[in-house]
Image 1 (spheres, helix red, strand yellow):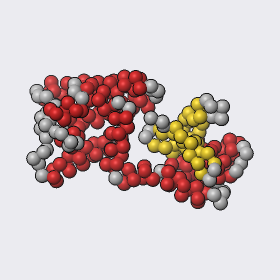
Image 2 (cartoon, rainbow, N blue to C red):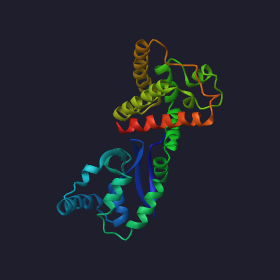
Image 3 (cartoon, helix red, strand yellow):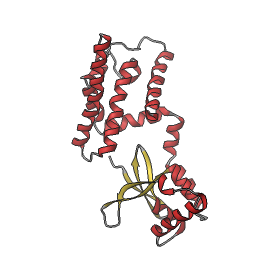
Image 4 (cartoon, helix red, strand yellow):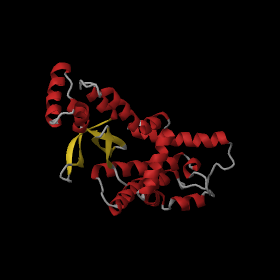
Length: 253
């Protein structure tokens, strides 16, 4: 899956990349688009000094160096900022283009805003990313010893959402495997499918070890045939809410 792209604002190229599941934008590209400066890097350096002297704020602390394609075609580290930080940087750029750019940026980040307002959208997108990268099966096999399709069959499910029919422990270990996989991936940045597959196994294995230790302590299997097919719709909805709540809590840790 491509995670680095070039966006266009009124003919100006804005490089962006996904980091921590969010879009991060090249600061010098944004400055060039708003100021038409031929020396955007020098403008950015002078701007950081000015803002520090005037407001006592270190703009570099709200940025992160990420690799983006350079003019020579190579991936080089450059200062990048997420949507919130770019808005703060724009406030320090005296340019008539600032407001139109803010609207453009808001449009680019609209999907993320939707997800913040409706966490279920973020959950669905994260699941899709896992499936596209082949994570889902590997994490599930390492965490529970079965693939998601085998798990659904074990629970007597067909087209139903597996997660909506998991009990609390099943949800916890599922999300533990996913979270650890994400953390490892962000640290090591695997760049091939096979490497991603190994990372998914490692993340799922952490959940698998924790599951087995839990089973020893409670004297029963975590994996259960229990489902909520005969439960009222309100209870099925509660299972979905529990899953989203656990995911959101995990992000705050």
